[in-house]
Length: 483
Image 1: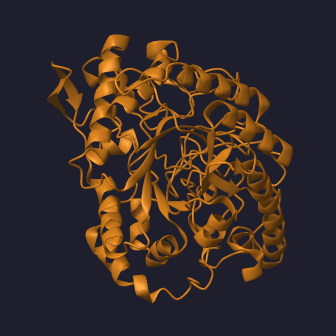
Image 2: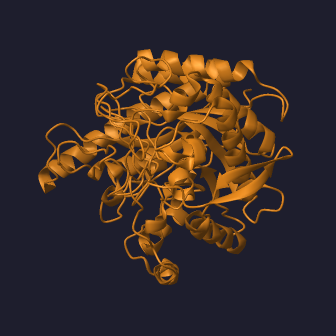
C-alpha cells in the first residue's frame, strides 16, 4: 500500500495574493485585488499568475483596529455556511490538509477569516513574505542598510521589515493556541523570484544606477536573505517555528517562450532599469545560468529545519514545452541533493493551476502530474482557479449557467488528481485554490506589472461567490452528497 504524505494544501486567496501556475494566457499573478500581478506573457492556454500577491506598489494597509474588529466579528458572520466543511471532504479523498491564501488586507474582513478557519487547515501568505514586502515596498531605493555576519565575514545588507507578515502570523499563532484541535499551518511564499524583487538588490551599493554586482557578491546576498528569512520564521527561537509546513524556494524560473530558463530578455519592452519586473529576470542577468536556483536550494537546505518542506513553484506547467523545461530544472536540483550545508533538497513540485474552461485537457493535466512525480515524487496544486468562459458577462442568467459549467470542469480535474494519486510513486500533497471568494480574486483586476483580467469582464473563478456563499464547484470537493 502506498504511503501517503499528509501535506496537501488548498490555497485560496482573497484580497491580494500573487502566484500563478498555468492555465490561461499570460503570466499574470497577483495577490491583491489591485496589486496582484506578476508577469504577463500571452501564452495560449495558461496564466502566469503568481496569484500570490504580486504588487507593484505597496498594498493598502490594514490597521490594528480593523483587525481587532474582524476578530470581534468572527462569531457573527451570517453568510458563512458551516454545515458542510470543505477540508473534511478533501481529506477523505486525498488524505491531506486543505489550505487557502490570505493577505493583510483581508484580515479586516470577518467573513473571509471565518471561511478560512471553517474550511481550511493552512494558508499561504499572498504578498507579505515576498522580497518587495520584506523590504518595506521600497522598490525605488534601498530602505537602509546594516552590517551582519555571514560565515565569519561582515557584509552590508538591506534592512528588513517583518511587520506585515507578522500581523497575519500572530493571528495564526493565537488561533492555533485557542484551537489546538484545528491548527492552521502556513506556506512561505517566496524566497527567490524574478518578480517583486527590487532591481536595486542586484546592484553595487544597492543602487540600481550602479553596476550589477558579480556572482560572488550576489551569492552572499542570496545566502544572507534565505538564512535570515528561514531563521526568523522557522528557527528554533522563532515564535512562528511551529506555524510553517513548507516554503517556496524558487518561483517561475522557466520561460514560457523558450521552455528553458527565464532570461533577462523575456520582454523586449520591459527595461531592466525598471524598479521591478514582470517578465525579465535580473537573477539571470547576474548569473547567466541556473547557479542561483541551485544555490537557493542549497542555502534553504542549510538553514531550514528538516521538518520544513522545500518547493519549486511555476505556472503554465501543463504546456508541453514549458513542462520539459521545468523537468530539467527539477532534475538539476535533484542531482545535487545532499546533507544540510552540502547539497540541495526539494520535497515537491508546485503546479500553480491557473486554468481555463477548456485548457489544459484532463490528459495534459494528468501527464504533467505524472512527469513531475517521476522526478520529485510529491506534487502540489498551489494556486488553483478557473477563468470564466469567453463572453461571460456576470449577469444572473449567465452566472447560473457558468457556475454549473465550472463545477463540471473542476470535477474533471479533481477526478484526474484522485486517479493519479492512487498510482504508486505519486503523492498529491497540495491542493490550492487561489482565493476564497470571487469578490477578491486576482482575476478581477490588472496592474502595471501584469494582472489576470485582460478584457474587463467579470470573473467567477473560486469556490465561494461574491456573497461568500458556496458555489456548485464547492461541492465537487466537499462532497456532492452534501449539496
